[in-house]
Image (cartoon, rainbow, N blue to C red; front, side):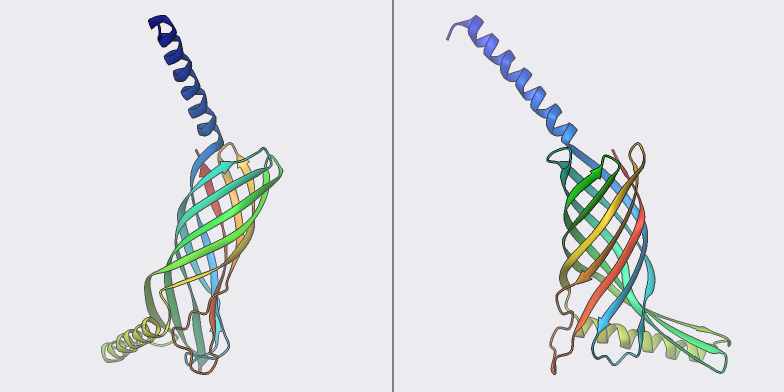
Length: 221
């Protein structure tokens, strides 16, 4: 190949590579998000008591790749404080057992933009245990050192019970909506429901599934 032709080919390849990189870069956005999580454990039998919803939080990062003006794919990595709580009151004293199931979430969704500023989405998620912690709070009376030691021992017993009885991973589905607020700033809300049974070795059909609602803000760069 002659030198001039070789130079022209190299220029053409360079221009093509720059154009391709620009197109891919324009189609792919990275972002961060954080917000409030309300979760509960949906169980058919348990030894912990009546489970209620627990407030928590989540933080994470995302990558969104546009396929067309209307469709996109999104993958996320989140750290979420989920779980449930047991609350009992008697004679003005309230005891709350907060079951904190700290999870690493990996949601993947297909997104449809109804308008340029509003999108709906859904897809599967997988979660992995980061840690399980139980925190007991007592309101309505003072707690002396001896009682606090007993509470600490009971917290540890519940943590061992949960760690030994529940699986370290699970999967489920989620659906939600996203609204563009200003430039890269957006608001996001979704509901996720577990499909797999959390209980490691069910004896008589025991089931436990983690369901949670998330709402928060994010920013795409």
